[in-house]
Image (cartoon, rainbow, N blue to C red; front, side, top):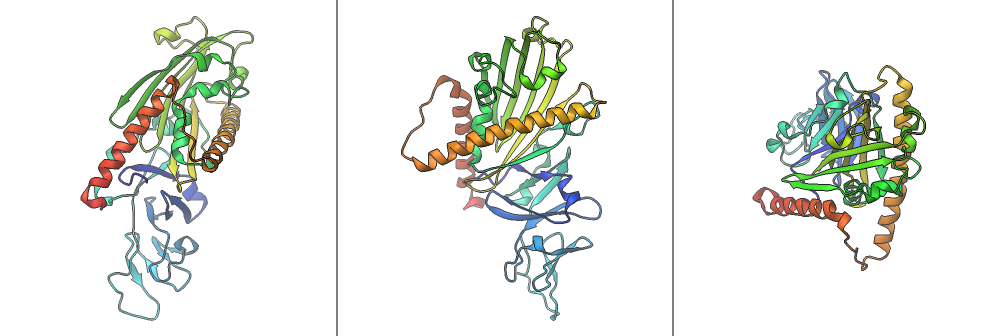
Amino acid sequence: MFLQNCWYVAAWEHELKETPLLARTIIGQPVVLYKAANGTPVAMADRCCHRLAPLSRGRLEGDNLRCMYHGLLYAPDGACIEIPGQKAIPRIARVKTFAVAARNKLIWIWMGDAVSADRSLIPDTYALDHPDWRYRPGYVRFGADYRYILDNLLDFSHLSYVHAATLGGSDLIAKAKAEVESFEDGVRIRRLTLNSPQPPFAKPFLADGINVDRWHHYEIRVPGIMSMDSGIQATGTGVPEGVRNNALEFRAYNLVTPETERTSHYFFALAHNFATDDPSTTEKLHAEVSKAFAEDEAMIEAQQRAIDETPDLKMVVIPADAALVQMRRILEAKLARESATPAAL
């Protein structure tokens, strides 16, 4: 079961520039996305109402979309406006459309009732469209339930082990106690790792031989939006007090959208505000983060297979799971409220 009335990331904005019609399955529903001539994104069900052929195999004619099976033409609002060979068009000849918005280089989609889509609820990802920050956008398709990906993000102790050769580099991250605070839409987490060896991904940007202090301050909102303020600086220069002193600072966005019950879209970016005039820095950071997410992908997909093979085994909860447990409760409560509303029945 998935939340319907919330904002999901459907695509990076550049994807709609690279292909006229983008097919993407979101919470089990096939969707086709494109941009109108004025740059406004359009999203509709990827099924012609006639014979259910994929509209993503169609062609754009101005702002309208023609099915290339029997030629029905659809306006951006989903209404069929032309059927070759006949003048009368049945009122039921239309396809479902979705509320969609472009913000900070991302295309957001509201899969539920379009009338209730409140654009003020789109999460803030400001560093993706800010002149002081640089990043390269990334995407991975995971063969796993999106909730297991969220579990992974909610407990950074895994950095010490899954990412020992990339983002981690020390078991001190796993030993550091995280502060967890829940709010209406998700969970906030603060973790400090002090006097640690340098993580492998950051060594090219740090002085040789020094130990570092690290912070990871982030929140994860339902349905799967993580935004993080993180950084690294020399040990003893003010991290516990919140002082930023010649730090490597990052803004990370990990955006998880369910595709099906067993597959997920994972959009990510690691923005940095240092060496912003050096494109090689951005490329190096993106390469390291991509390598790390490949490590996550391998572990989480293996976890999914293990769960499917042994469904009767129960997971043992440990104290490090505090954020996971709170997030599941918030998600389940929202799902229960949504399923109880008349619109969802």
